[in-house]
Image (cartoon, rainbow, N blue to C red; front, side, top):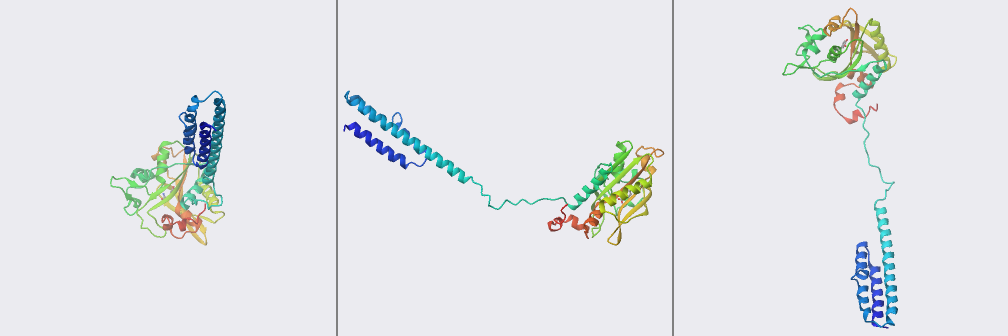
Length: 331
Ligand code: DAH
């Protein structure tokens, strides 16, 4: 065997052992450069071919090709094996274990006051009403004066109303929105006005300084107390089912005649709203002609209705944000 043959055979053996020991694709590439690169081991060995005789040259040449092909094949096979192993490892790392416990995401739900307001709105929307809103900070004009409160009416008293330092007030009822809406819109009117109200009440089981009302207003030609009564009855029956309803005469500055409405609930009469025919002075204040138009209005206490619906005994529970309480109301 010539020296070159010995070198080539040794090179093949050494390279094949090195390939077998490789574990990463990067190292494999280094190895390829080391043995088969331009300045690699094989080229160096073949550099000595120039000194060979004419008979020896083809022999060595074909051996060199054989070694080169063997190494190339060895490198290719190793690369494929490493790539397959890499994909395998990645698949394993990214595998989803469908038997693992799921991530717990608590399901939220509407607050009972929100779901009560939504139900009330749904019923009136079904009767052709649309929703209107107004500011919670009001002027004396919208909260009282335009609603026909006399300057010395007790409702303006410090006992009831929260006055702000700038002379504005926090609205004591949603009736103020009636005025704002009628100022901007011509009759006929059919609106409901849900919203938050404020009073200087001492908080107890049935009083809250912050509470919600839903105001109703209809103005048109020829509306009478019968229309008011029918609307209220349809609403209360949609809300509570067939229950006894009672209208009691009452007084509000902005309605004439006025009434309070009670429903019989668990053997007791419970007041759920004030209502009446819109006072002609209110229509005049917004520029409606009381000779042509009449209207009816009502103001419903949302907390009261929610408490009746869900048999809640203390209004403060509705504001305590106690999840043990709130979770009972899957609306
Ligand atoms: N605004 C009244 C209150 O807060 C409730 C009320 C009574 C509203 C009669 C009305 C109504 O629209 O007609 O006590």
